Image 1 (cartoon, rainbow, N blue to C red):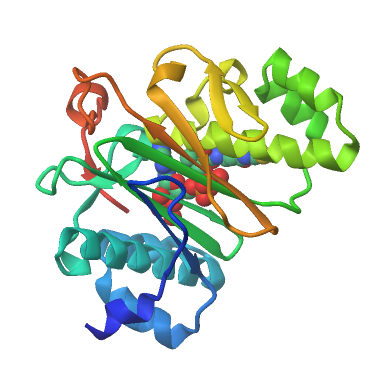
Image 2: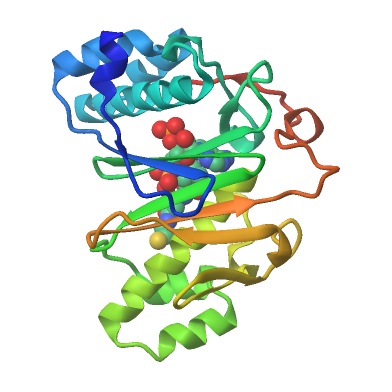
Amino acid sequence: MREATLARPLRLVDPVPGVQVWRCDLRRDEADAGALAALLAPAEIARAERYGRADLRLRYVIGRATLRAILGGCLGIAPQEVTIVRGRRGRPELADHHPADLDFNVSHTRATALFAITHAKRIGVDIEHAGRTLNVAGIARKFMTPQEQATLHALDDDTRRRHLLLLWTCKEAMSKATGDALAAPFRDLDVRATEQRELVAGPPPYVPAHWRLHAVDVGERFLATVALWAPPPDEPLRPRAAQVTTGSTPVS
Ligand SMILES: CC(C)(COP(=O)(O)OP(=O)(O)OC[C@H]1O[C@@H](n2cnc3c(N)ncnc32)[C@H](O)[C@@H]1OP(=O)(O)O)[C@@H](O)C(=O)NCCC(=O)NCCS
């Protein structure tokens, strides 16, 4: 269909077998956004209309329509037939009538969006602009473990800033796989990001044996990580009924 082909996401190199990642430029004209809006659910249209700024509204419509086109392609259905609900702490997830083993997550920075999909695990993704300015000392104190702070301390200023961003993408990707988001225990997630990215220590459910972190090749200007979480078999891949007290609601 015309709208779905308008989405045009760019498939990136799989960071690891079984994980697909797409990148999308959210800068598109009003005509494209108007056509792509036809793929959205009413609640998504309503959310788009709540954005006060036209550029943010446009980016949301392009991003959400592209996500629907990708998920529809994976599921073999039209983008409009994909039902996205909110799980734990608002984590966007597929509704229960879709195959339970497919999971996805979304991240954006400025006008670039990243979409990551996998089967049989839970996935989180985070992309940051590599040039982003930060309160390095403040973020390190608040969100990094003593070991990470020691590693950062040994680096020169710009390498420290960049390494902090890299660690952040690992932690935020993990927090988005569980749905904890900003409620995750960032300061207790001990990450090593040298040649490989790995969780070295953390409190449940951030147990290193259940986690894998992978770099996503998004070019020099960005840093991105996908986190794969293999919850224990007794924990459902979509834990809404068990863990979300408000229940799942249609996405907005
Ligand atoms: C909401 C949060 C999950 C991510 O917010 P963000 O910074 O806007 O990050 P991203 O662009 O990577 O992610 C946004 C997407 O995550 C998804 N998301 C929302 N809530 C989520 C949750 N609980 N779990 C997983 N994913 C979630 C959504 O798809 C959302 O995009 P959409 O609203 O367009 O659908 C949260 O962790 C947050 O606000 N983080 C702020 C991070 C920050 O300030 N870092 C600075 C340190 S360097």
